[in-house]
Image (cartoon, rainbow, N blue to C red):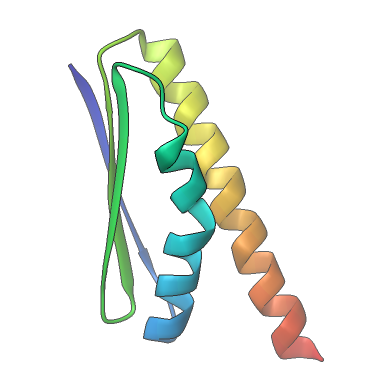
Length: 82
């Protein structure tokens, strides 16, 4: 089994929870052999991707997840700048 762990530090606990919620739909749509877990603790978002398939599948999943995180972070920046 392949596994990647990730951790993101945010300015506030609200931001960490909001990003966790933004990537949550990906968790529910996982396919068999692929699991994404997330949790928050204060201003930190923790997570892991477990994959029983190929390295390419794991890399693609991580890429998709990072794109979702980036979009959420960009949204926070845009709101802050207003």
